[in-house]
Length: 120
Picture 1: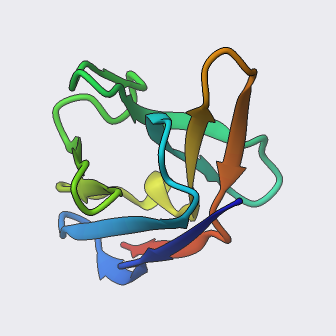
Picture 2: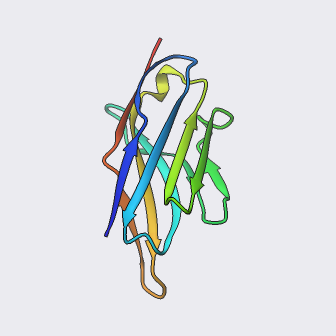
């Protein structure tokens, strides 16, 4: 099993910055993709950014140029640096990791979520 602990959420004014962290513990061998998702009230959960083991990243169009995802494989931690925050970025942010022990299937694990609130 893998446990994910998120931190770094909070209240910030529009234009400000926050940095989210998500640390994995437990059975961390085989972790590959890591990512961040968010869910605003009344909306579906959506992808924010992902990062592969080789460092290739993918971003939602709405956050390109403002958010940066990174990872520290030695610490089994993924980060999300969020700059130029907008009120529409307000949501609960979740980290997700995929883990696979070859030749078995991949399993996904979710964090508990951290609230990000951007005020105008």
